[in-house]
Length: 372
Image: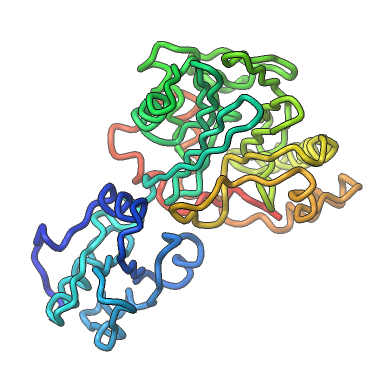
């Protein structure tokens, strides 16, 4: 009953779905993956039916009685697009307009949208990789821009720079990432601009090293580096006057970065203690400063505002014990499983390389960088 051939008309690609969501097209997205996987990460606008195993065994399960809330196209989503293709074919047989998201959530990990915020002479364009939770930034002032924590194809950032009529003068990573492959080196190479990394002893990629207190000029705006070791030993934040802190994976809106990726047990403990000090340093910043993180642990809806909060608001949610030993003991006792392929990804970022295949194969899945 559920057998299907590869019928092109049953497919919708990532770019089309991304465009439909951005344009507020009336559609219904139905995620048919297993509940634990849906709960960990999904398309923000999706409904959920845990019917993957039934469909995989050849039974329509709850699809037999399914009807969309409105008479609109239904987009079926699974892991890599095979079972959702069969589900779309079945719904078509019932007279329901249905499509399968080609490549499933693996391909959707590259989907993105943007939100922007003018801030005291700095135009903050937040680029949200919605299928992964990565947040990167185009920071524009006058006719110049800096890209921070690039996680998407360089053309995304050059296109956005063109829209705001700026020239990208540098690409910067706040640390060596382990959950996604940095596109910063590729962007820097394509534009022949500097690639900035915090000073470290690991990276073999050619880069301009940054240390605590360094200043970067973007147009008439100055960004100051603040060393915040903990998530990784080399992590930094970018401080924009009394207005904003671009906190990388050190501090999120309601969480902070885990200290154990690509580390042995001893280094994890060292990083945990360093993270405690870094969080206290950030907590001491002016309460009205905005925090712009490099990740979110919640799916990002199209059309949602910039993901940011004040220092005061963040630390109303983020608990940091005064005692470093208590903090270390608590967070080391609750480390979740690491992101998939994190060791491989970390090694590629050390070398500044992209894989010879689709990076989404390595990066698919939730980022799992956050702790509370």
